[in-house]
Image 1 (spheres, rainbow, N blue to C red):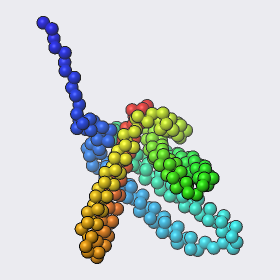
Image 2 (image 1 turned 45 degrees about the horizontal axis):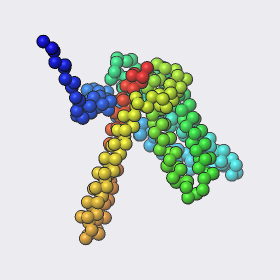
Image 3 (image 1 turned 90 degrees about the vertical axis):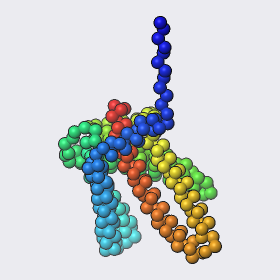
Length: 273
């Protein structure tokens, strides 16, 4: 008696979506609301610290008066450098805390600020690398005819921002998993440019959410225009509310994707290594 071959189980779209990296990361975040809440709290505290830093910088900027134009330029450069270094330290401090919450989702971890100074150095190095790339891009754009500059800028800016986003998250995850500064930078660039298959879903999910929001806002904006077509004052009031709601929804959705993607990138570094 011949045995019938076992039929292959076809995985539908719903099943594949449930097993996607984003879905797994979301379930992981959902499984531990305390740790996810801590991540959100650290991000809120970072925004508060930046707001306070901006207010403090504006206060000191009013009292800075240089005797000559040359000294004024030097003073501006020094003041800006100090500002960005402080802002970068605030970012490093809170992102380091967020990474501990992410790591604790995967395994038991003991929180310590022992490597915070090295993490700050890592961020300075990454900022320096991408600043150099940005200056090179500006030099290239400056040599192009003015009417073509906006198109070239968009062509260069989109991949620049995407690669910056990927490298920052991968290097941070690698570092918090125990890598040195050098290895974190080296491996993050290697993974970013040679192993796109591991993290492409994190970029794709951002694109899909952006398209969905664009369709939502486009449709809603068209509806507002139709409703207020015969009443201009109604149109202005409706558009004002629509604009405020759009900004709030965009910020919430964008932050939600970034929050889940942080977990996804940490998971990616565990799979790659």
